[in-house]
Length: 139
Image (cartoon, rainbow, N blue to C red; front, side, top):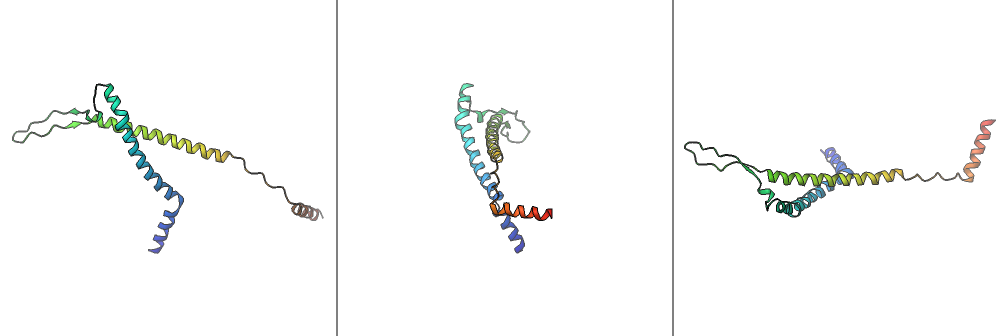
């Protein structure tokens, strides 16, 4: 049991697991922000342009079926306006994630392209030891 706890502790403390947890939390908050932008800023002007329609209210009402002896059921609807709004949310979030990953890749590429520091010149002692080594080899 203690081995399992130790393995979990090692996993949880690793940078990747912590980074992933932070990413999930920030991603959830970012999703709410984007949803608010779409719902409250982008969709109202689009609805106004197409005649004052609120996108979440767009739906197709299916014909109700009357079954003898049963109370009339509420007609079923296909809420395509809500789907369109959710689809726009997704597209905006996907585009933002794409730009973020592209930026991170660009930064990591710059780190890889940085020239490595030149190796330091050998000290006088190292030069002398190399000469002695070469002389001993030649004998």
